[in-house]
Length: 448
Image (cartoon, rainbow, N blue to C red; front, side):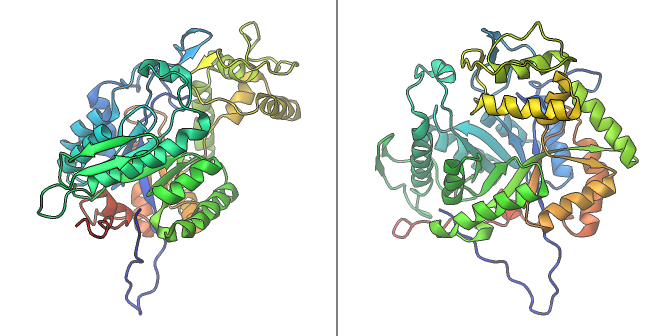
């Protein structure tokens, strides 16, 4: 468990604006990215990862964020060819990026369900050593038997046990990372728990950050508690300022129960952005991008994922089905399940009827992420306002183009954020923990 001390401040110095943290998400398996057109590159070629990472580092971002996909998604029993096909393993890609970047944090999404603590702790510690203290682990859980089939464990873990296993996983990894005393020989680890048994010495001394930064993504009550107890950063999704403030207050309010203060956990929603020379130009571009993201075919796929049946005979520019969903978990495999399909269908129909929207228009309006749309000055102002209002500590930017989707933001918005004093003009430390204002974890008493 990490603790944070408040930064010292000269008594006579007036407080400055709240600094924001920024991260860059490499687009992957989602409907946020535009995968057609002249400006689209490969999602597998290392040149794509390198371009986006170098751009983020040029913008003095905190970290580069890679998601994970452990099985190709399927729709109606076939590989979902409208989705992204192919994704390299995250820690391997980040290890290569460590050689072409100097300060940028490197965050890998790795499932705590389909890995083992000793092996993953070793990979992440290696990345932290190789990068000079820039490694982070986005801890996710996986509950679907479909993905488990790749690991010969289909359906073996109940949904309710996901976070139980994840908590023991992280605690065991931390035991391993702490097992080397300063300047001494490793202490044998003897962990015995419900999910893991580890006995023996760890292969690496403590890494430059002590522990890699822990990131958590999830919005359920269990996920919020897990983050409050364990994480250094939480990756969220909230569409409005007020929703962000409610989430921020709720999660920060859970920290004292775990002996942590509010600054020990950074809250960073995933957001998109569209820039224009005028407000009208930006809105027009945003509308064009949304129609590229949600093609007629993708609109029908999204509809079928809610209704649970084949709707290929429907016109994407026509009305929504007038019957209730017939949930079929086999129709869409590898995606997060929709908790209450009927409630979603009712909400979509109500919106469609109220605004006169077609199927495609309804999907466009209901599936977008939080977006900052406007001139560079307006986007900088709105982002700073979110941080000032404590709706976020920063943002994980999800560009719609790979790999050049971050270029305009770094060239046109970052200088304005720096002029406002809300974004660092230069890196002030070498490690990701220093970028985030997080101290190195204290080695447990008696183990140093």
